[in-house]
Image: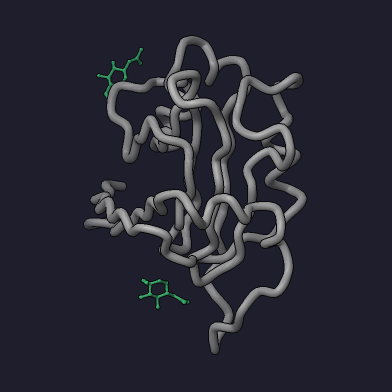
Length: 152
Ligand SMILES: *[C@@H]1O[C@H](CO)[C@@H](O)[C@H](O)[C@H]1NC(C)=O
Ligand SMILES: *[C@@H]1O[C@H](CO)[C@@H](O)[C@H](O)[C@H]1NC(C)=O
């Protein structure tokens, strides 16, 4: 599968969907256990246009999205999406995405997760829950990426 990534930066935009803080209070870092982020993902049900907030100290980590193959082998050669800045990523597609950090051995040490965004219910309705944790993100830039599958 081949993806085309379009990066849009909106200032102080408010996302349509629910907002989740990756890793909750721990944020985005090399986790204490390799399955930490998989456990975090399994706590929630994500739908398209939900927003993931990555909290970390700039220069210590980044946000990298890989193909499944590259994610499995922690190969950072061809990221689908990458930003050095902490902030919010809004996923405007229903698909599975593979997030990691490209720094050092962070991926191999478990700073990574696969996440599935289900198709949004119709009609789209506001999500009342899961938004309280990330108020500060609304002041930061909102990174959005849109993927399109090309061919088969
Ligand atoms: C990483 O992926 C690139 C292509 O995306 C490939 O050329 C390279 O061999 C891969 N590296 C490893 C170590 O698998
Ligand atoms: C998701 O966001 C895109 C771009 O803003 C919009 O076109 C689409 O309708 C949204 N999907 C849902 C289900 O709200």
